[in-house]
Image (cartoon, rainbow, N blue to C red; front, side):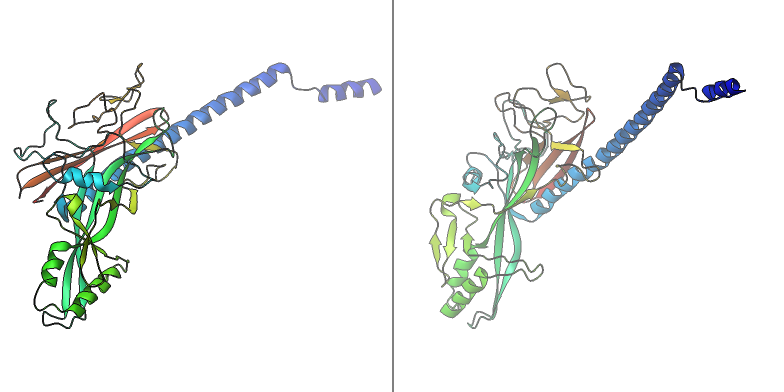
Length: 372
């Protein structure tokens, strides 16, 4: 009897065999790989949907913002040697946080053409930085006591620049940087011609001149409540070296020698390039050509043996690529055509997205008509 009980306990306490353990491990491995594959597919699908939603939103919002400023511009500067554009461009002081991308160029006006077509290899018209003088709502000056009236509307202007910069928040396509589009704004300038003509009127008294200068220097936008002090004046009809003045307390004007145009307000034109709206894991950039010579091509997102990456949207499309300046024009292009009074301005941006080894692109384009 005692022996029978011992054998029974021995059989009840028998452990798992090696074969059984291997079967269990195999089953768990299969289940793990199935779950991992499903999770990977889900993540990839999520990122695919995110970038397909984000790319058109980012690009179109950027070109729409440029168009809004162009529609309110007094002057759109261009880069031909005979124009005042290069002088104003040289006067710009770009913010240290967003330096101008090396090799950037202003568009060159083509007044003889009304067609927005790619450049001829022998002549460059396309640029990748745009400078405009935007006309702001006039400042209302009140409390005047002279016979010229109790109030005065003073025209005001602000320089705005749309340009590319190299940033190092994250890398893209094997590079340790990405390219961002920046909108930078200058201080506000009063209209020099208008103020000098008003100050020279026989009905303008000294007390009113002082009031105008004082109220301009402490001006606050009545709609937004933003402080917009205006202590300088700009003569829009002349070259940059002789176009700027400091407004004195008595409405006099002191010429500014060797003027610079500071850009104290600047921000990315394309929100979300640092990580996307949803996952925070997406890498975005304005399309660019790498400085080592490899570049983005057309048709597919396959990485080639030479290190270049093919995308469906050409970078560039209107400018002719110059191997001596591989960063120009990158994925932002501006083209200005037409005679005075009927200008057409093309603004084009190509944004790239990178996720799990894939590169996708989206072109956004807008054409603005104007007289400037």
